[in-house]
Length: 136
Image 1: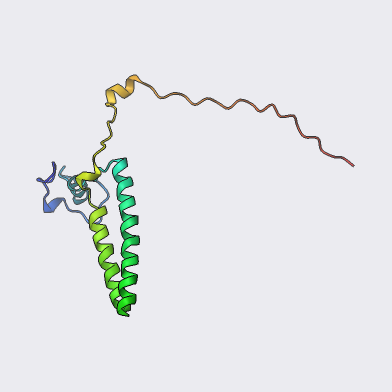
Image 2: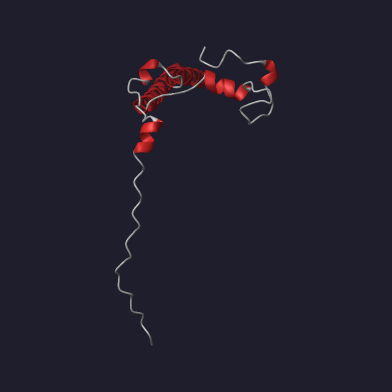
């Protein structure tokens, strides 16, 4: 289990609750779930997951159509495609280790304070001449 998942008590469960701390200072169910199931997939992993999902769904759609057409069964086609969707979900949704090969190196907060953000430049006034209007 991840850090913070060991001190969950039934008294800290609030329905419905948006706050992350109860009156007693113990973790609520929402905060405990966030700590236990943190998802930290890097950008390249998200791209790979998206590509895998698209390829797998198209592949299962084609194989389901061919299977259903050859067997003459619409039900079989739906079952093959539903199985493909479930398998695709199991492969692409969890945060598998191969999705985290390129971790991001965030700047330490103390280091970030030493390098302030650049200020946005104000746009220069336009030098367009006013258009002439036709008067009759």
